Image (tube, rainbow, N blue to C red; front, side, top):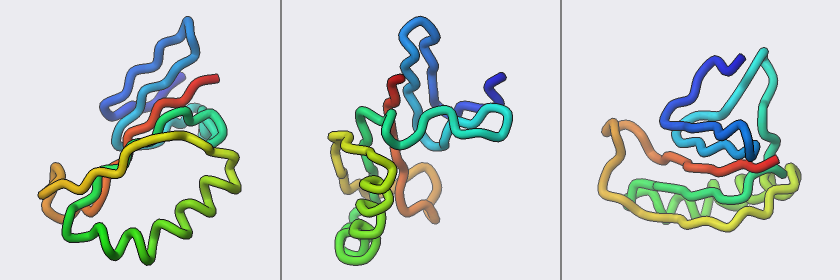
Length: 96
């Protein structure tokens, strides 16, 4: 049973999950480990890009590497996101 998907669609026949905004969990377990991610786009507030690239990105890359994620994607600087206090949002596609 899928409990949530914010801006996501799961296509059952092909086992493809399109996800934006949150991670996918069912019965308390992650549905798609990082290794299943085939596309990962990042939207960051433009005023946070330098801090992200120098501070956060190395640790985030390490976490992706540890999870076996080799997904291509786009890092896009934007003026703002849905809420003023948001710093970033991720959009992913996972295939199993």
